[in-house]
Image (spheres, rainbow, N blue to C red):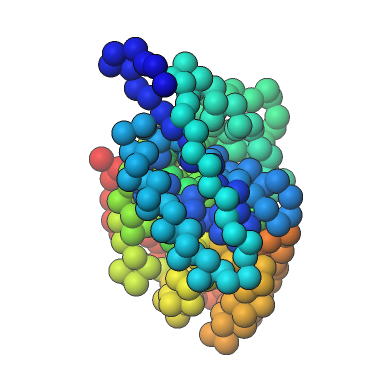
Length: 318
């Protein structure tokens, strides 16, 4: 492909695969510093992950994604063989090629998620602006949507009763859940992720949404978090949820929202968490993924073991 001297060249990696593999493959490309990752659901069972990377990364990423897909088949033995296609992309088509795939998306009863280059028409919803090129979690995936819907419902129960609340987002990715919590009425929010790239991406989105004063970001695992919260949200893979279930249960005082679970594993994950002595208030089960809102039993509408405010620390997003 011919090029102008000094002009950046791009390549797309398009992976057609079973929807149960989407999260893992999207995260793979984010970890390899893709400049954009687009998720498209072709039908209830098959999806396409398209990643945009600079041409100089083509050879390395080609080898690593091929090996990664091979090993992923061992995790999902019943899945169909993924199909990988790599295509050079002309520079002049780069911006519109992946940005054109994003549209404002209404989620739940109150939220509208939009990329920063689109200014939606007046809609009466709470706008969340997410830069999709930075980290996983743009609102287009079932797991994120399920989390947002259940988080909205949990927060509304507090705000309708005039109750202050704190929220903890474990595995924050792009920061979309933390930002939603802040805009829906949470007084204080903490967001953590073990991936420093995700934390920095979340920081940019937090600032973009004007909620930096409400949200504290840290590069931490769930077990490193010491302060509990009224509501905990965890959009994680099943293995991580199982490993951290006791920690997550200990960290929430009233409600726990979990997601990131393929539908074939949802019943098992539910049982794992119910065995911790909590109850399932509501679940959202769609074509391929399950999400759940769990609670701790108390004598009234609200839990009686609410934690102290998270405000013992000073928020800093520098």
